[in-house]
Length: 196
Length: 207
Image (cartoon, rainbow over all chains, first blue to last red; front, top):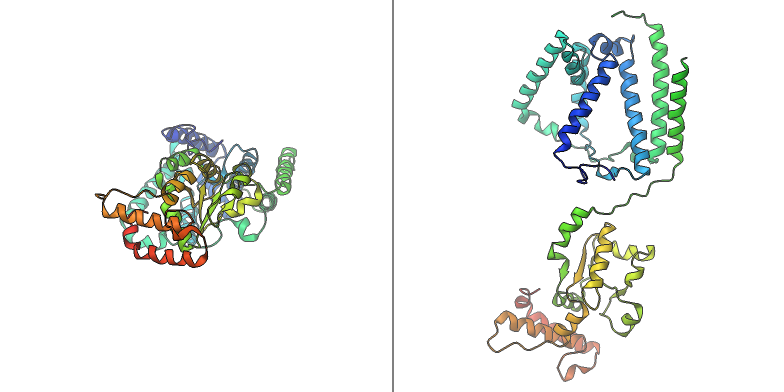
């Protein structure tokens, strides 16, 4: 059946409408989880609050399990889903920059928009920084072009590389997630609670 | 620990275990209807009888012919080196390895074009590529290769070259009008091949 737009079951012009609705839902969940507070986000790095890790990990495994079951029920054709090629080097460089921005600014791009929406001034500054960064990057793109397009010719999927089935990999991922939740809850208990 | 965390965690683990033990999903590589439609409008899947004859005579190794008619018709007459896969058994797993060969051009033929087209469509839907249909089927084959008609005196040089080729090919396949070509011994065949090769340049325009 799915994906709906790729197979023209609903028109492509609905793309932005659906993205808009999902975006509002996403923003709502972020705000609900308290992600509009930069202190909460920074908590991951200082060890007093791991809500960020829990929310995103739960989202990832829920979506994974859901998609796989959907695929089994033939509700979605996973071969039609676009999966990014592996850009290893640019992913590492980008990840470091993003991590730095995360710990310095206390926001990731999504949460900064979310926090701006509820009137946080630091988030607005962060958002301004994002746009300046985008502008600078765009203007100097030719310098980074080679890094940007540097694909790695390896197995695209981790489970293929490991030689295990997709389902087994998901089970392992779930177990890792649960272990991470448990360990981080222990850390949270050890570290002094920060009030904010 | 909060009871709701325990419940949701065990639920996730349960779902994960189910996923781990589900049999590997067989991904259907069927091509989508929109792609199929655009390919149906593309005439390049048709191969002329002249091209097929040329392939057989030259023994092109990267081409295989598949006869999709019933076995009894195949036994009565078929093109040299053709494999018989009747249309009703085309989807049997035993045959799929024949059709699904990446580097090999597969040309389907039947008496007309209809059954070969059905075979093409079924195979294409399964995601196999490099598939072709002999246009006009064996009827056109008889008409053009085995009983080639001499063009008018005023015909263009390409038409005449085409006729020369067809006549030679007809002799090669044991038909035609040549008196000496009645038997199909191999020595004769070789002679005919040489004759065709001389015309190769002109013949290229019609393939």
